[in-house]
Structure formats: structure tokens, C-alpha cells
Length: 390
Ligand code: FAD
Ligand code: DHB
Image 1 (tube, rainbow, N blue to C red):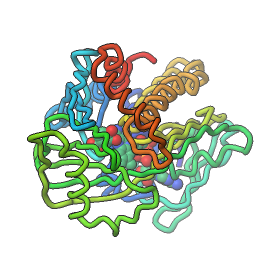
Image 2 (tube, protein in one colour):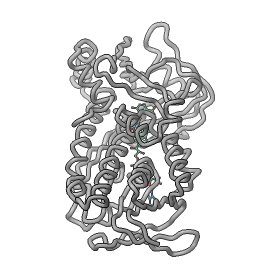
Image 3 (cartoon, rainbow, N blue to C red):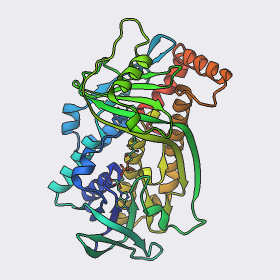
Image 4 (cartoon, rainbow, N blue to C red):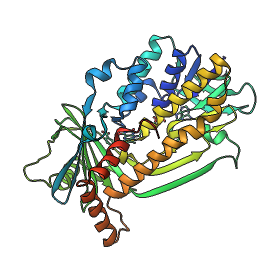
């Protein structure tokens, strides 16, 4: 089998890239380890920056997003028994949209399928070869058969546990990394959100986040120990801890309901540079990871492949390689801005096990400053809604 761009991974990055390439008349094949059912139901991110929404709309993916996505013009910061709104739209002219990552994935799969796109689910043992030659090959197993996909370029969009990055010879890539001494326990609950906007809560017992997916479904997160076993968190314990950390403002109470899904996610910051080696281009979580606090991961994945889509179009349509050559440097500008913002939001809002009382006082001082200074609040807001130019 032969294609122009072989794409590993059917997450937001791989699927959007395939869609963008198709719109530029470029052929691609997407190889995904999981089933279609699995990727369409994997509960993860929920916040789209203004730029991500604009990109999805511009490329014909805005219908359901416009109908079901929830536009938010502010967020709430809750600490020390008080609630403060950051008026993002008033401060920046931009907004975010709450729309589940799996909905973005479903829309992309539907669009690719309707256009006759080649998506191969449940492939095994993906191996990349010949990346430094004119025609790389991706070998894999599908339905018990050994297959080969010959291509001009490979896009490694296979997430944080992918294999693409390991095909680069030792010594080429540099990793910048930070681990955090905590994790997030996330739940999806059949309960009407108790607030119209997201609530980021700083609490002595740890961070909590109140988010949502629809007027009937809440999405909630708790800071927990990094090695947390989900079995130690029966539903009653989760609700009780959420109440303690979120019901700190007079007259506000959480709505509860059946928990539909729960999982624990570790927190990590990672950037691998450069994002390209020869004919392999890396995008999304395959090459950088942020802790979820700033809601940046999916947005970065989409922004990377928007650049790649343009770069491949310039190559195939005009024979230009400047955008492919510049891809890594251009993408890394945005990546590092999001790295800083995610690290900063994480450090500001979480209880740090090693935290001395001095650091805790600095967190509270920063929160007071953020909620009283228009200049500082604007900085948070413009990073949160996504900077147009970085
Ligand atoms: P992925 O979505 O991980 O997709 C990679 C795909 O590659 C997967 O389908 C995987 O199965 C496949 N794959 C892996 N290995 C192989 C292989 N060897 N062969 C073939 N296929 C393979 N981001 C935000 O922007 N906003 C948020 O609000 C937000 N909240 C989050 C909350 C949580 C709890 C978590 C866990 C993440 C959150 N994120 C958020 C981050 C976001 O989910 C990721 O950044 C996003 O999924 C990255 O997309 P991707 O396409 O790069 O990778
Ligand atoms: C959600 C996830 C985040 O990481 C975040 O910062 C805000 C919202 C969510 O899943 O809704």
C-alpha cells in the first residue's frame, strides 16, 4: 500500500491532520492501535481555545460544535472562602468552548469516513523504517496479516505512549521534563453543573475543578496522590471530598448524581526537541505533554497539525520546503508558551507535598493579585483563551 503521508495515531492530532491534508488534495492513511469505539468514547479534555474553534469551523467541522458546544466568557477562581470571576472575554475579546475531546474525535472520524478516508483501527506492532530515505515505510499487523505502508512522510501523532519518537536515532532529540508529585482523579457524573462557568478551586486539602460537558453532565477533578488506586475512591468518598474543596462559598452547593466514569491521570510536563527528524514529523502528545490544569494539551495538538497541514500543502502544491523546515521552531514557540502557562497554573493551584508555609502564602498572594489587578488577570485570560500569535 502507498500513500503520501502515513499518520500514526487517531487522536485529535492524527485525525485533524488527515482531514486538513484531504482538503489540500493530499492522500494519507491513519493507523490506530485502538478500536473506533474505544477512541470515540475515551473521556479526556473538554476545553477548546478560540483559535481551535475557529480552525474547526473554518475546515467544515463546526456544525455540531456550534450546536452543542458551550461558549464560556469567564472562569471562576475560588480560594480562601471567596469566589472571583476572571472575565476572559471582556479582557481579551476571545472565549473558550466546552466540547468533549471525544466529540471532536467523533466529528473528525465522521468527516474522514464520509470523504472515503483510509482509517485503519486495531493495528498492532507499528514499526517505522527508512525515515532518512525518500520513501519511508510503516510496517504493522492488521487482522493477523503483516502489512506495509509506503509513504513520502510519516506523521507521528501517537500520543504520550506512542512508538514514533523512539524511531529517531539516539542523541538526536533533547528532552525537557518535569514531574509533579500529584495526580488528578477525574469523574463524569449525571448531575447538572452547579455553575455556568468552570471553577478552579485552591484548597488546603488540594486542588479541585468543577467543569461540565452539557447541561445534564458534570465533569469534576480532584488532586490526589500520584500512586492513587481508583479502588480506594468509592463514589461517596469522591463526592465528600469534592464538597469539602468546592463548597467553600456561602450558599453554593454541588449537584450530585450517578458517576458514569472515573479515572486517575498522572501529571507531567515534557517537551522533546526538535519536533522533526528527516521525514518524520511529530505532533501533539507524542512530542510534548502538559499537566491538564491550563487545558492546553488538545489545543496544542490541533495547533501543531494546523502548521503541518500548511507545510505539506506548500510542499505538494508549490514544491516549497520552507514550512516543513520551519515546522519545529514555529510550533515550539506556542508549545513553550503553553508549557509555562500550564506549569504556572499547576504551581499556583495545587497543594504541594513538599510545600513550606512560605510557598503556600505566595500562592494566596498571587491569587489575590490575580483577582484584583486587571493587568495580571488579562495575562491569565489571554493565555487561557489562547494567544493568536505567540
Ligand atoms: P492522543 O489523543 O493521545 O492520540 C494518540 C493516538 O495514538 C491514540 O488514539 C492512541 O491509541 C494511538 N496510538 C498510541 N500508540 C500507538 C501505536 N503504537 N500505534 C498506533 N496508534 C497508537 N487538553 C486540553 O486541551 N484541554 C483540556 O481540558 C484537557 N483536559 C485533559 C484532562 C485529562 C484528564 C487528560 C488525561 C488530558 C487532558 N487534556 C486536555 C490533554 C489532551 O487530552 C491531550 O493533549 C490530547 O489527547 C492530545 O492529542 P493527540 O492526538 O496528540 O494524542
Ligand atoms: C477540563 C479539563 C481541564 O484540564 C481543564 O483545565 C478544564 C476543564 C474538562 O475536562 O472539562
